[in-house]
Length: 244
Ligand SMILES: Nc1ncnc2c1ncn2[C@@H]1O[C@H](COP(=O)(O)OP(=O)(O)O)[C@@H](O)[C@H]1O
Ligand SMILES: [Mg+2]
Image 1 (cartoon, rainbow, N blue to C red):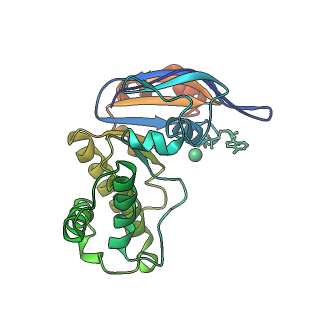
Image 2: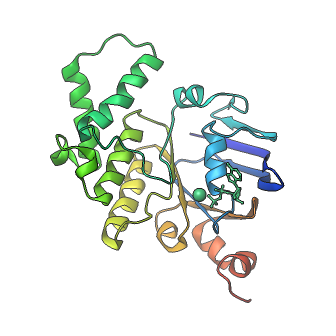
């Protein structure tokens, strides 16, 4: 799903979390969003998903101006996200964690009542997609952290998004789990979902992203292919902490 951020500014007190950010993403695939802590990555996801309002500027999503839309309206347009801090219902089963957003989605789209069996089948399909169908009946809170991360991803996918915003989904995962998750994001992009992958750690993003945006102190430092961004002197200086 195509989106466009035009001259977007978000201010918290004296801090410009986003400072006149302009970027346009018109392709499918994985867009990697990197930058040091406090660069504005989460704020940009919040702005795209309607959690945070812009002070000035515009955001368009697939041709629709969503600058002043509430988050429920934006999710109805096909946007789903995960959060930096794990968000699962620990006392619900893994399956119910995925059924909840499906019910919400049906209500949002004012679809008629779907058969329970059909919803269950769809939810199990999503669990299978992220590799946790075997855990469907377990309480989500009893799963290991890496599996709970997958429950969270399954919840986002349950809404059948066109644009998937992931806020540091690899944090806290082992290298093996992280590689597996990154491969899954690439596969989802292959399926036609536009994935925005926010990561603090550069290395894990470069391998799976088609394009990279580097934020620094609320501004866009660089945009390009992974190769272009890594070679960019400004990025190397400001972000990778290297001289020329
Ligand atoms: N709700 C908030 N209230 C005040 N300051 C905020 C808030 N959210 C973010 N900030 C500030 O905005 C800047 C960008 O934060 P954030 O978008 O979370 O960065 P990142 O996700 O790249 O680490 C930081 O200086 C942060 O302290
Ligand atoms: Mg963040």
